[in-house]
Length: 419
Ligand SMILES: C[S@@+](CC[C@H](N)C(=O)[O-])C[C@H]1O[C@@H](n2cnc3c(N)ncnc32)[C@H](O)[C@@H]1O
Image (tube, rainbow, N blue to C red; front, side, top):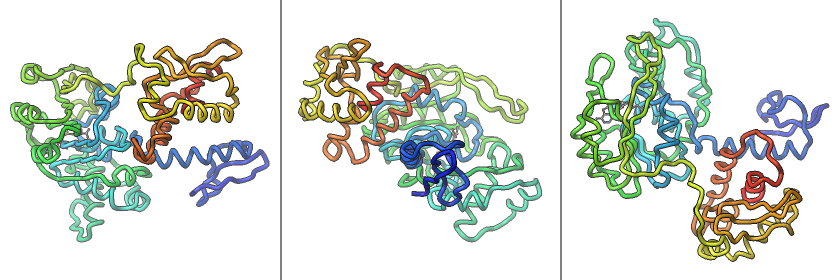
């Protein structure tokens, strides 16, 4: 573990082992809290790259930097096992989305993109940061462009530098004078990811499977000095989309014919902003974009259930004995300062449990959904090892809002006992 707990005059602090002056809190805290803090820092470090939220590696013209959140949070599907992005570009959508337990395939026809992604998969991010961070002039840029590196690492470094330092990552003219980043998280994020440098149609064909989800963000503007690769023909795009056996989400700038061509799919028109190019003086410009899917649901939170089976029946259908589940719930409740004897099963087909609190009867947990306890009980049987921790991390990330909730509110009861 790269952290230590240090004793200070004001209490204990969690600090970096490599640099004990760098600590995670300004003031000292009690030892027990410091231990918990160290654990959660380690978990979040471990999971950080699995939970997305990383910035793109390069700023591609047409990159979805400002649209990624809406796309991923609202339009991406809930379930799939393989994620394939045939036009990955700088990866703004790819690095924003969670990795979790998906198999991932990213592709771009641009060999520079391929070299950059491969480099961040292969070389330690600390070394990359050490070698590329700094201030650069136009003359430095031109010197880098003229070098002829021979080792794989130097080829990668040149590809990354000319991309990152150039105007709109076109690798042509000098535009950005500084690189200052830790690049933390990219090694882990790209670990095990298939990185390809092929034409998009081959990639769709090779990974066309009912469990695959394709996110397609094709070039939509004719090749010119700004765009090296020509726009993908819309008729061809439709033909390939028609062949997709799994799910796809296609984003495409607004054009008169799009809705008509893709009329058999779900077409949503959304307003977005792009970071503009030289013609807009680099200002953001508002534009409309089509988001087209061959599925209905988005990845938004599951809708609250209507009445269904009582929770005890739900547990039995999962192969869990209700009394075993309740025993675990009561143990956790006790450890979190709740009265275990106040908990019983709900039978309304909506909630999981009932807590007889000093402030009244409280029902909590959504009967049809899994929770940390269920994931834990079924790990190695129905779920891969590690699922429970990943799901718990995601739940806490989503439901820890920094606000004070009443101890017996369904919010707190679920967070503290079920997760
Ligand atoms: C609109 S950009 C993708 C931007 C990306 N979604 C992002 O947010 O960074 C389109 C990408 O498709 C790539 N591309 C163009 N033609 C291609 C083809 N025939 N096959 C695969 N990739 C292609 C381009 O190099 C470019 O990086």
